[in-house]
Length: 249
Image (cartoon, rainbow, N blue to C red; front, side, top):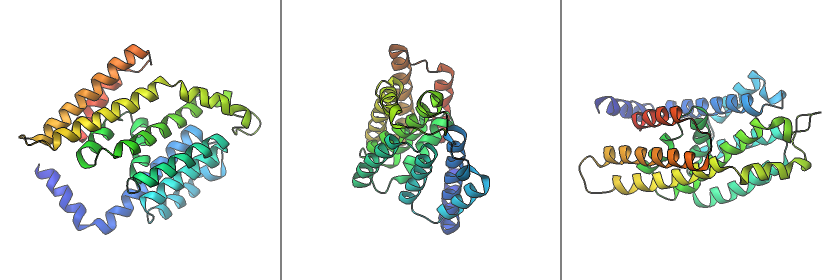
């Protein structure tokens, strides 16, 4: 508790400096992840370009950061479907949760770092149930990147590495039949509600109880769902991810 208070006080005292640093690191890591998974456009994936984009993004709002990363993904893929999906996503996103642009950046990162469970727990602690929309969009964004990355040879044009109109049906089918994505969205929504309800309850140590209960709920839903739907998820990483998420939360 003392350490947490010291960190909060330090951030509060140096917020003017810390906020750009946090944004810079978030964008930098995000661009590196994009480069590693769908980096088909060599020009914008050069290290000097990545650093420049990260530095400039450090002084933008979280909403603008989401647009920067979306543009980077769209340019890397050059796919009409991805552009349309992102356009729809942002129209809904900025209509209902315009101040939660950070979630669209952090959720894909959490998935790539194997700790996706920390997001719904943290959101349930500090946000409202409306944030379920943001978490769902972030989850879809991650799985869209994952589908394109893992099926690049099937859905991209071999001559230039871009997604053409002939591949749109393939991507739609892969996304609509992605049981792991559906399970992740449902598990996250339930976890957010469980954590939110418990942390607002008039009981002792409500936050601690909410964290543990939410983590258990997410773990059970993900594990049982993975077995029933045969999503081939790693039980080891589900357990490790849950433990790390509890500690971070």
